[in-house]
Length: 329
Ligand SMILES: NC(=O)C1=CN([C@@H]2O[C@H](COP(=O)(O)OP(=O)(O)OC[C@H]3O[C@@H](n4cnc5c(N)ncnc54)[C@H](O)[C@@H]3O)[C@@H](O)[C@H]2O)C=CC1
Ligand SMILES: O=C(O)C(=O)[C@H](O)COP(=O)(O)O
Image (cartoon, rainbow, N blue to C red; front, side, top):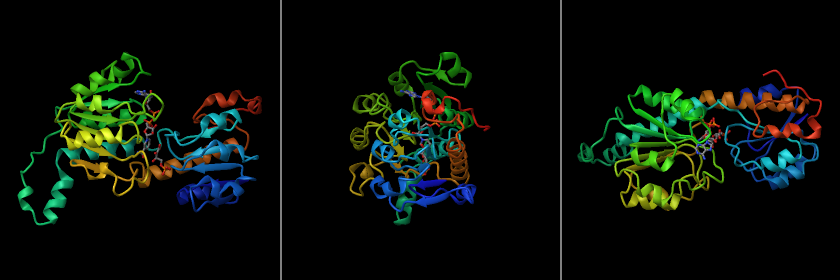
């Protein structure tokens, strides 16, 4: 068996392929640079790299695509599904890590930690008290997308004494309330009442730019917004304007429309912004869980078994999968 990886998974994941598969790790994430290797590949594992239709169509032996993570917006799932190629994902492998990262951003922003560090190290002790911090306890946190990460974030926020409200059009009022959150049918109304907004929706045609100038201008001036989901869900140019104009009090973002963003990207020069390099899931724990879950699923599919954690289960309607059974998870 041959596995191609756009970037190596962690050693704990690689070890699972010892003696089972040859592994080719591309040193560049551009599909054009590993297309030759795809000619006889059984599996392709991508991290945040793009996997386009061209790469899929030029891989005659390809049986499975693995995505070490949850967001599969970078993979052409439609083309893969049309070819009967499941896209294995790893739901739940990084939910705790990303939720902790989102809450860490809430704490850092509400306590002005980054500014305090930067100014104090420049010798400016007067930063002390220059801008009042605030407590998270008692504040409204509005969660967009109450999936695995949204729910874990809600759980941590609840422990901090925050009031939880959520918008998720794929969940009923009863389900949302069952998770301890106040139900909002309209996300714009949720944004208006939130002291902190935390975004945990996938990037889709519906969610792209769901937070733009209008929504930002209607938020509380004291509000914080955190995006550990995907770049493009908040319109970056509009966020830049809103932060510069003081329309909201601060933002934390782990994700960007273009990754990495250019150093002269105007967003990076905004006041009250904290950033991280798409690293919310890069914890010791999550990278192992993502790699192992992804490799396990890819091996099962490459061996002809159905795997339940795939981006689109309708792939199993393809004639290739007619007589196949599910693998043991
Ligand atoms: N920064 C990072 O390193 C990471 C980012 N992510 C991003 O976080 C996203 C969420 O991950 P999980 O919670 O694990 O996925 P999930 O699939 O468990 O949850 C997503 C939730 O969003 C809801 N949703 C879908 N469309 C929506 C819409 N238009 N409005 C409101 N809610 C909507 C779904 O019903 C679902 O409950 C991923 O799609 C990925 O893009 C995930 C892991 C790591
Ligand atoms: O799970 C997701 O979605 C992510 O964005 C994670 O950051 C995935 O991590 P990588 O495997 O792409 O490093």
